[in-house]
Amino acid sequence: MPYLSSRKSFEDAQDLISRFGDNAGFEAAARADRSRDLGNHIHFCHWRQIERLIILLSVDDVVGTVH
Image (cartoon, rainbow, N blue to C red; front, top):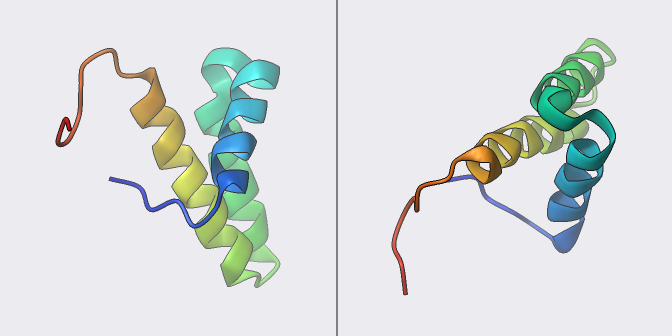
């Protein structure tokens, strides 16, 4: 399960999904790679989490514990 440190993580995922559709995960991965190449480990981790969140949001089944 991805860890969301703030609402911004969800908003970033939502923005990528609305702008890139099915390619949103690829865009998040590209942004993570770009951040890694620049030596920015904070943004690298952020975009990797966004990539995982986008994948999780695309699944139609319930994942994890239901309360």
